[in-house]
Length: 110
Length: 113
Image 1 (spheres, each protein chain N blue to C red):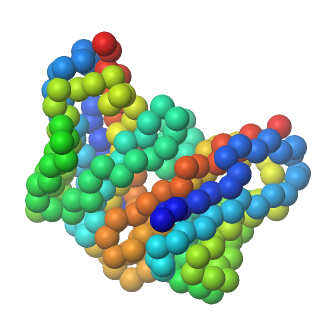
Image 2 (image 1 turned 30 degrees about the vertical axis):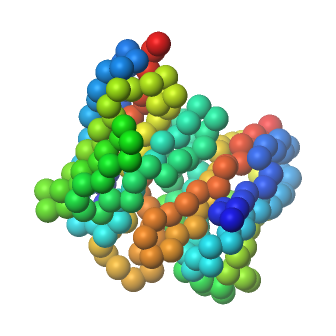
């Protein structure tokens, strides 16, 4: 049982490049979400999904896109990376009770 | 939206000491979790505790939902307990908010040998 799997673990991008952070869960959870963690600011919600085909914005959605075509996968897309998007990104999956987090992706935009 | 405050922000202990971390929240919740973020950045689930008391080894947690706070107790601390401890809640607002975790700023715990 893998839980929540994120890839890649580390990534360096140049300003203006695009990339997709992958997230997959094997717990059949309907709810999935993306957070970013910046120093001194805790974790903040970017986007979330309550099921396949349904997504919505969180607290800090600008610069990010998401889609949810299957229950298992919830990718996060950066269309044109900016230095302000340098952060650690966490994907989470939640059932009726607790949420579980992936191992995180450390993204640096230069 | 719901506000989550954790205290203290920093805590330094000698190995073997006990500690209490506090989490206050501003509104009714139907989900409260404690996480430990280890020095490698992983978020480890400690407790799912929207109310009541739970224990797991040297750690225990109590949530008093009616008074809007939760406590995490660490006894006989070890150097491996070092890291950041987060409290996260889901507001009882309902609807599609059932999964929206709001995090506190965390307590940075350092345990010296």
